[in-house]
Image 1 (cartoon, rainbow, N blue to C red):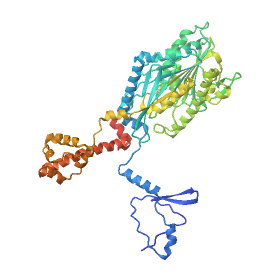
Image 2 (cartoon, rainbow, N blue to C red):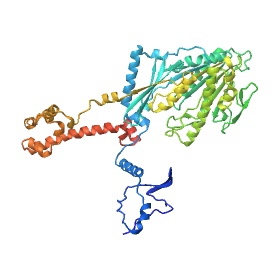
Image 3 (cartoon, rainbow, N blue to C red):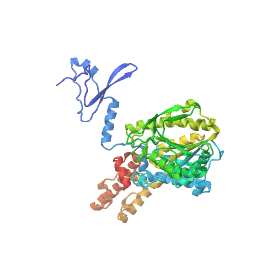
Image 4 (cartoon, rainbow, N blue to C red):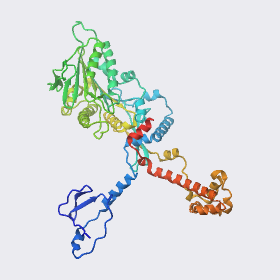
Length: 575
């Protein structure tokens, strides 16, 4: 018999165990984590004169290591599975949509008005003319969102505010709840709002002010795929028509009345999208500071359109040259900021149209590669700088120079931050109604509410256990919980009353706990010795027991115990 091995001074690497060092209050010790799968039980050590020191150094799996091994074994046998938020939302779509409908009905009943026109015209009661106004537009829910991703609508536009329903589970993954985030803005455009409605409400006055000598700025904020570029191109199209309708024809037909530059900001780099590159990359421009504190893109190409059609062509050309890339969230995701600077020479007005790149979160890796995440970090850095500038503008009507100097984007837009009373600024936040975009959307809405000076909105948590029980129906009692009356009622109804004769021989005080202990031979005895009837009675009773046990197991496990991959579940939703 071989002696028990001692621990060597240098611990070698082993494919079946991993060594790690841990510090404790008593000193530094070694710990061995061992995978117990397939390891035969160790035989008891043999007591020999020289085995004392060996016993001192012998080791056994720690409770922590044994627990990990047991957890791995349980997982292999079909134990607990963890799912991300979006998978849980898809799996419990009916539950969450029912809760959202119930919330909307309650709000409509309390308000007494449920028409769409009231929601579309809802405004926060504040001053009409302010340097910064914040609007929100909710894009429609597309068929692709529903059929391919299993998404559902989590945004409600109610009179006076927008409500985002964040559908989540507690840490136990079996207790659903919804957090209703309420936000107020200058105006909220619902899913069915038209581009014309958005332009007339959010941008028309700013365009008019620019034509009269002011400096107007329109920003588009939002995540990738929420409709920023779609909304901005529509605003640009209608603004082009209004600009040439408001300015006077020049005395000399050769004198330009409108000048336009189209810049692209990627990180701290500025590119000219109107330059004639002849197939080469667009030139990078240097941003120079002027004596008055403003900045200019040195050497930027400026074109002079003479009619609305010319201006539209220039704008379409600039957008077509922007850097875009296909992601899982959007086939043509804009990965840069687009800044369109329109100069109005007759009145010395200026109109700045800014289509910001899609804002993403650092933790998002489902739709973005490592390069895309790096781009997102640069995009978010510039957006934070822009947010600070807008906050200063809304509270102090002027932005300190050290604030707008932190980013190339804010440098290019310095005219809007130092113009004082001449400036008007509108922020249009675009929001996706999809449940899978909840975290993105709540970040966008919080940003918009902060810029509007209204904090981060209000939250209301609603537990959904009652609704979940209502959808599942009444809970069936286990046979061992039956009362004597319930036992006799079940015997009367089971198998169309075939076992009514058993009631004559069964004691009247027999409870369910007593009944489930009956063996098959006892059931045959109750049926007068008829083996076929006794076996059938025993089988029917145990079928009820198995059904209730299975239902309870599913209820305890909840969605976290459902087998299969995320792709399998999503494909099931598509079907």
